[in-house]
Length: 258
Image 1 (tube, rainbow, N blue to C red):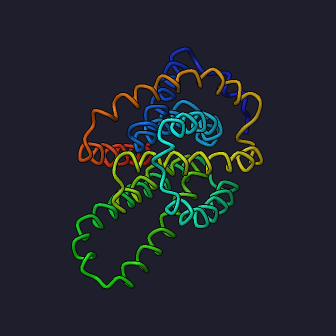
Image 2: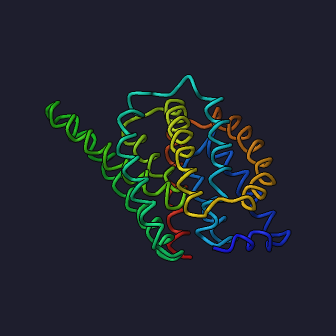
């Protein structure tokens, strides 16, 4: 990959990336699914594979700000339940990136996001029926769901930094309220994204030039996070869930149409 292409962006393209970086901060402290819009913008301005390497450090900046804001609301049993499956998904995503081209990456992630949104909406409608099942069935179903979402979350976050919507769908489907949702996802993505750094560097997605571009864009993540912190206090639970789902659908469609 020729990372020199990162230096050939125009002022308008840089402004577009800066706006997407602002949205990264907002998504980390307010509406997680909005992050799919950022990854679609980065993939539109930069080569799709290269864009994942540029976006990852910016996501980590947003993760640090989110952890600082919502650290007291994390649910660690949920995190420990997810991590083994996520690790498997990251490995699968790394193998996939060895041979997949930009078009395959975009189509695969877009289709996955829309599929997981549909499954989540179906599961929410079936929740009342599930509540009537024996505890052993519910527990077994919960373990299967955690593993399924965990593998998909690890795979999508490694391939295109698109694990946010998958994890958003999982946390919504398990009944997390707004602050618990944000606190749990903050720690989850900080740990997962930091663990992805050596894989991304090994694939040539991160180098000195991409990090210099990150340094220029990171200053826009911070105000986005503060805007998100202000906004989330003014969003009720139902609107919060609808925004997360809507942002996930928009991001998935954008990836499929490119």
